[in-house]
Image (cartoon, rainbow, N blue to C red; front, side, top):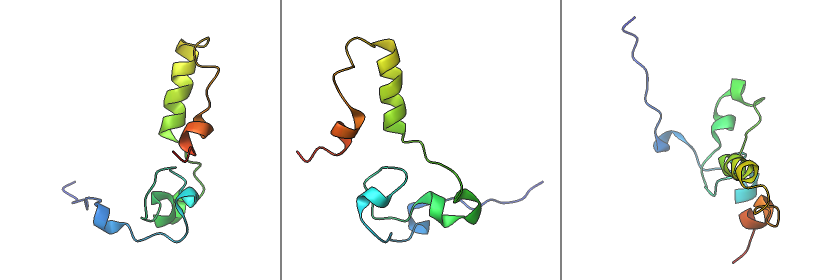
Length: 78
């Protein structure tokens, strides 16, 4: 069981084709998506972590958070 594992580093990710919005992790990066690197991951749906955080906050503070949108914050050009 002393099988060595390779550590995944930023150098392992190639430059991506396309703009930032094509990235399934919804992170601004010019690197290839981790879902495109491995064939078995290409059928996995990405769940943006920032959206999950906002949904949790909305559940806790449902009256205070109904006037904002995660998509507005994500794609705001300011």
